[in-house]
Length: 428
Image 1 (cartoon, rainbow, N blue to C red):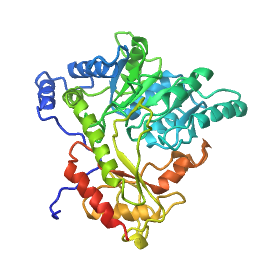
Image 2 (image 1 turned 90 degrees about the vertical axis):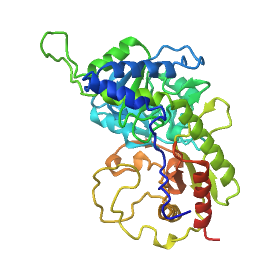
Image 3 (image 1 turned 30 degrees about the vertical axis):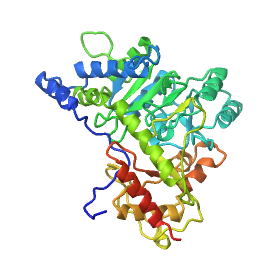
C-alpha cells in the first residue's frame, strides 16, 4: 500500500449518501430551532422508538419510550436517578467497560461495586453478580440499588440470567447498550429488557449525532420524569421554581437532525459491521497466536460488532517489542481525547503485554488504529478503594486484547491490508 493511504480508524459513523442529515439540519436553521428541543428531537425519538420496539421491520411489538439527551453518560446518570440511587447507595456495574458506565454513579455520591466478566462474551458474569449481591447485603445490611451490565464492543450480555437474578432480588437493571445499538438477544433489541436502556450517538458509534445519547424507558411516566430532570426540573408555575436538582441534558435540535438522517443508514451500518467481523474471522483463522473475539454460538446472541476485538498470545513476538513502554505517551490513544494529563512513567501495575503494545505501535506506523481493550474499572486509580468481585478474566483480557477497525469506511481491501500488516508484525 502507498504511503498516501488513508489512516484506517477503528469506527467512524458517516453521513448517509442521500444527505438526509443536511436536509434536517437545514430545517433546524431555517425554522430557528437551534435549541435543545424541537421538531427534529421529537421526530428522532419516534424513529428510535420504532427501531427499539421492532416496529420498523415488524420483528417486535414493544412499547418503550425514548428520551434524547446530550450524551450517553447523561443517560446513565438520569437512569440511576430513575432507579432511586442516592448518596451512600451501592450500584453493581460491569468492570470491563468505559468509564461512562461508572462515573455517573459517583456523580450521585453513590459507590460503584465492580463485577467481573465471564470469558465467552467478556461481559458481566451472572455468577459473580449474584455473589456480589449476597455479599453486599451481608456487609451493608441492604441491597444494591441498581445493576449496570454493558454490551462490550456490541456483544450482548447474558441478559436472561442477569434479569433472572435482578428479579429475584428486586433490583432494577440499567442496560448500558451504548456500544450495542442494534444488537439483539432472542430477537429483542438491547436496552429494552431492563428498567432503562442507554444508547450513545458519539462520533464513533453505530450512528452519530456528533455527540448525544438517549434513554430507553419502559413507559411514558418514566420517560416524562427523565425529561423533567433533563430540562432543569422546573415545576408548573409561571416562573422558575425547583423542588429537585435538574440538569441541562436535552439533545440539541440540530444534533437530532443529524440523527434522523443517520437512522436511514443504521441497518446498513449494522450489516456492514457484521460483514467486517466475518471477514476478520475468515482471514485470521490460520494466523498463529491471534484469536478474533466471537459471539457465543447460541442463536439468541446477535451482536452488532461495533468493534472487532481480538487477543494476542503472550508468547507471540512482535517487531519492536523490545522498545515497548520505553517512552511516555504524549497524547491519548484513540479518538478525540481532548486534554490529557502528562505522566512521569510509561508503565502502570495493570497494562497490556509488551507484544500487544508493540503491535499497536507497529500498526500505527502502517496508518492503522489498533487500540487496547478497555482497562477494567476496578484497576483504575480513581476507583482504588471500590469493592470488586472478579475471577480475574477481565484483567487477563486487558493484557492480551486489542481492537481492530470496523467502521463504515472500512472496506474489504482495508481488512485484508490490516490482516497482512498483523502477519508482517509477527516475528517468525
